[in-house]
Amino acid sequence: GENVEQHPSTLSVQEGDSAVIKCTYSDSASNYFPWYKQELGKRPQLIIDIRSNVGEKKDQRIAVTLNKTAKHFSLHITETQPEDSAVYFCAARRDSNYQLIWGAGTKLIIKP
Amino acid sequence: DAGVIQSPRHEVTEMGQEVTLRCKPISGHDYLFWYRQTMMRGLELLIYFNNNVPIDDSGMPEDRFSAKMPNASFSTLKIQPSEPRDSAVYFCASSLRGGRLSQHFGDGTRLSIL
Image 1 (cartoon, chains in turn orange, yellow):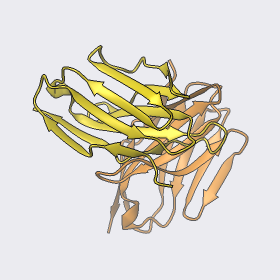
Image 2 (cartoon, rainbow over the protein chains, first blue to last red):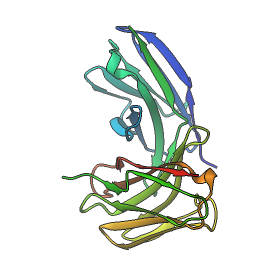
Image 3 (cartoon, one colour):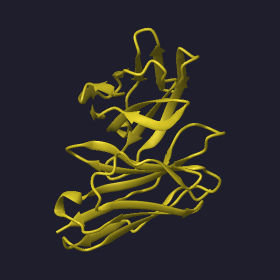
Image 4 (cartoon, chains in turn orange, green):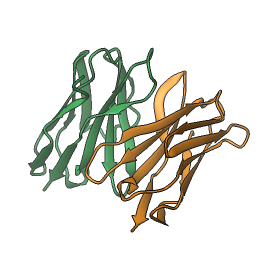
């Protein structure tokens, strides 16, 4: 069936450095790719998303890139700050099915 | 907008008891999703509705789980009888087909079955 693989499961970076989280999807018909951030004890919240007709999208310190040929997409966080510490989830979806297929999550730790 | 509202926020009950979780989606949203989140299994989709109609319930773990959406502004997830392995955080999310495609999550219900 459809699945999304996410790596790494845990990522520890020094404050101020960049962090990259990668996801690979199996369904070539997927055309929408959101990223969610979940802080401890809180709900997942959308931080950025991208559609398949776009290769890259930026919003201040975060960016998402998409390679449709390779079926993978990545989240980039620059100039990391302590408040970036959280679990990040990627997901994929096709227009014909409104169900999101979720990655397993990446725990991002920002070291002071 | 008030966002997705879930109740209760916390529920502690003994095994064998019936548990009912409630969700009010964002007004105007036509999709509603129920998720379960645990450390071991991550975020699992249990069931989702479109215009109050269940579309896919293949994620519902057992017949002990049932979900209803009697109208556009209310949904319930029921577990009867509950078991300790049902302990998890249950999230409800809603989305709008014609608008932004993302799902908006409620704050969740932390369920503990003793």
